[in-house]
Image (cartoon, rainbow, N blue to C red; front, side, top):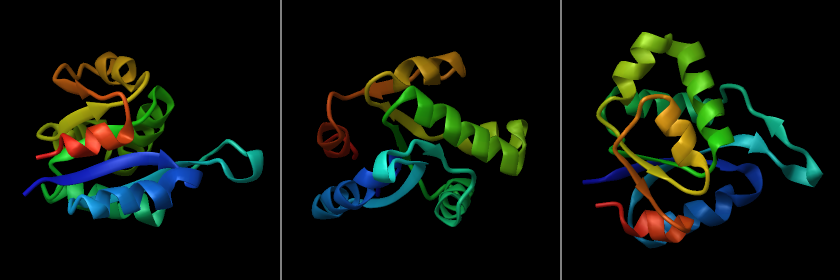
Length: 129
């Protein structure tokens, strides 16, 4: 069974989580940017992110969806700060990567080659299998 991990901004987490749930896909969505009230604050490792990291480490997450290059950079900075780069790379090596917008370029700059692109969050979620 496919399990989706995804990064997002605070204002979209609830709606995106509901969309994933409606498609009957298990998912772990984490906010990496707080955009409430016009803010744009990077969220350092949160409890939700730690939970996702643990699920990734256990091999329970099959797909990771990133919605922007900035979200890629924040997520990897946080997981590498928590586990160290080498261990984080090992944890992430068997994940299927998915991207929206400019996330592909940030993933490619990390040496990730097999990336599935989508135009919308819903299209990306629909492609998880």
